[in-house]
Length: 248
Image 1 (cartoon, helix red, strand yellow):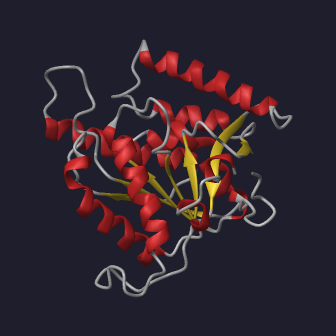
Image 2 (cartoon, helix red, strand yellow):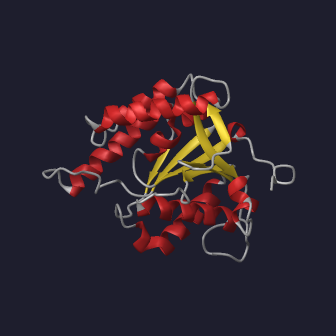
């Protein structure tokens, strides 16, 4: 069933304030870097909310957890400056362990939505098939729940004044319904990813850049541009008791 006539898909590029939720430093750049650069360039306020500082994100022995956390926070700050600058909120949840803190995470998500009152939020799509990283699934679910709970006066009353539900743009989705032309900002996305030196050293870095480039080119063909980023854009009405939301 096509619900677009009664539940139109919001226009992400009309956003004025976006909270971009990321499980770890670098996820926002991987999934939405070109779009974030476009939004900032046209005057949208973009605020990053990074749930962990990615202190488990290494396969090497030698760097301490504290050292890696410091490095990754600096890399994230540098990467956002490359995209156009903005505020970064770092939370201190343990990397790989969001599932053990799901109830607290949910409260923090709702609190920050009510505080900043965005018209859009971004997050990794928790319904991505074969997504094995629990932090991506848990944070995506928490953000979706925050979207539908934010206007309810008697829900989490101690967590700020209720606000209208923002729209949500899931990146890394298997069922995108929106493609953003990033032909002019894709190089900035790659440069921002290169700022995450601790994560994307060879051979992973070049392989990732090639994959993302090919992926953007394939998605660009769908809307007749050189490169595009895909999103599953939804309203709060899509996120509850809606059997056709995945098709919308």
